[in-house]
Image 1 (cartoon, helix red, strand yellow):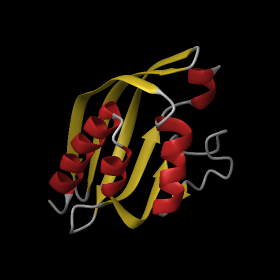
Image 2 (cartoon, rainbow, N blue to C red):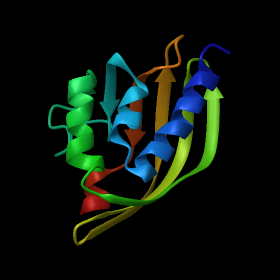
Image 3 (tube, helix red, strand yellow):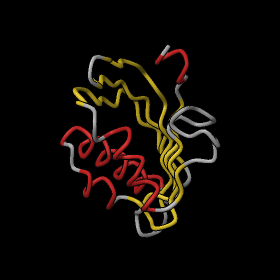
Image 4 (spheres, rainbow, N blue to C red):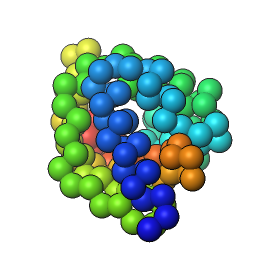
Length: 131
């Protein structure tokens, strides 16, 4: 089954670190050359749509998107490991100042042999969610 269960374990840890506000713990899950696409495609969070590549860019993403919020809920309602990946259905509630974001998304995590995440892809509609 490849690294699917390593990806699944890292995905579970990712949610725990996000809820705890543990920036360093969250960053430790990623390989040095990892890429984060959250959301996948072009958005104000990623104008190029190419994702945040490498630890420095992923740390900047955390500081821009995750760190300033008050993540009150990160609940994995379904988890499906296969190959080198794990696809999770996730429900979140994040408070960003006066804005409350509640949504369901699909997040696909890919892990390498060492169990480090090489890719995190979150599927959700920025315009619909933030509109």
